[in-house]
Length: 242
Length: 227
Image (cartoon, each protein chain N blue to C red):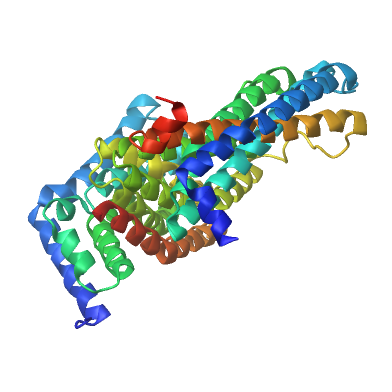
């Protein structure tokens, strides 16, 4: 197990494996997203209350789930990197941050577009919206800290500490915002309880498609990161046949 | 090789930090002046009407206090980092989390406590009724403490980073939002004549969390920055 672990962590080995796995993530992601979009935009019946407007749900909810999942993966990778001093884990955390930030942005943007026809406003200081916005700030802080430290090893470890502090704070932020909001007004507007199966499966398809997409982009970014860090290594010259 | 006890070492560090801070008096007074100035801006920008000021007072006091404390946060480790004192502290054989805790506490004494002391003045100028003063002071006592212990992590991480002060706000502000929510809520409830104990307890819980976990994260951050 450990041997396999160390082999995976060696840059040349990882570079090759990542190259092989990208299509295995990328193509299924494309198929699942296309199927999910077709199912969501064409096959699923219109909502009896929101009409066709609810269909943005198929992009919004998977993005929101991904935005939190990616932060979890990022913090886990950061912890592994700090504890076992594994460069690859740090690279995973670093590569995940921009992807997660984009998912968060997509969730916010689609939520805003959805809010305009449904609630009559682009932005509502709803608990979920607010905690999602704070999540975006956490991602941006992480990216900013990383980019302002030049030494890569120091950047790795500093941003890992920040990611861990952030992940402890995330539930606190979430619940504080929920309580803050419930003090101000009634419960949130939409409940995802009653959904028929033909409305649900495209969403699941989209979610899995997004996960695989994340995997594919993560490996592309990791390969780029390996190239950047090992730019003077002999194996890379051979690999790229320079 | 630990020769000095924890308490002794902590006391020495604390008194040293205080002495240094009071020799650079303007560093202590500047956040307070900033606090007073920012809160003066609000009546000018919004309206001098008492009823309207009272409505926004809780938020204004809290946001202004948070920003003023943030202003001072940058200096928590900076001069010690630049003149090598921090390196000596890391090498001193004392547990770094303890030194981080003491330094954050000393920093709070010179930057957070003055804000707490001046807060009734600011609150009164924003038409906060006298009955709510205790809540203003109590909530800011906890709130500035949270900012010092949590902000120490950010201050440690941004040591030796270009344009560190903007970055520091970017890192620390999202983390302090829960404190802001509960603190401003408590003050608001007190102004309206409600019992503010609920949000104050939650604020206390946040304070204990940042007091107990913050120093460990700070010591990790300092170790990274000292490499």
